[in-house]
Image 1 (cartoon, rainbow, N blue to C red):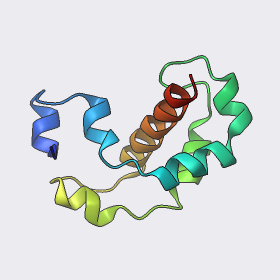
Image 2 (cartoon, rainbow, N blue to C red):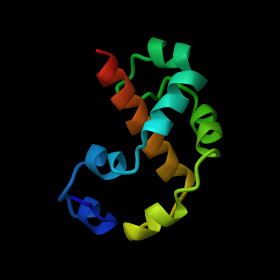
Image 3 (cartoon, rainbow, N blue to C red):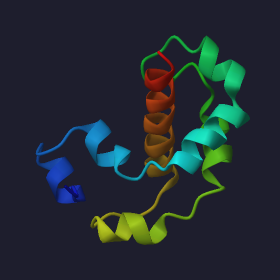
Length: 96
């Protein structure tokens, strides 16, 4: 199922479901290679113990403008951070 921005804002899907639909295996691989120690040391469920500048830097590698647009959203740095943190959450979950 595809969730739109409207679905997310009206509570029809969770944060993880909305941003998770934009996560790719390539992103998960990139995060694993770019910040392995930070990811391993992170104890915050929202990865807020990893600097925002790190997430912003990683996000520069991805376009996703069309993908966000297809969901009725716009690509922003904040949106990219949400996608990347969801990718990181999936990486940690899959490693458990």
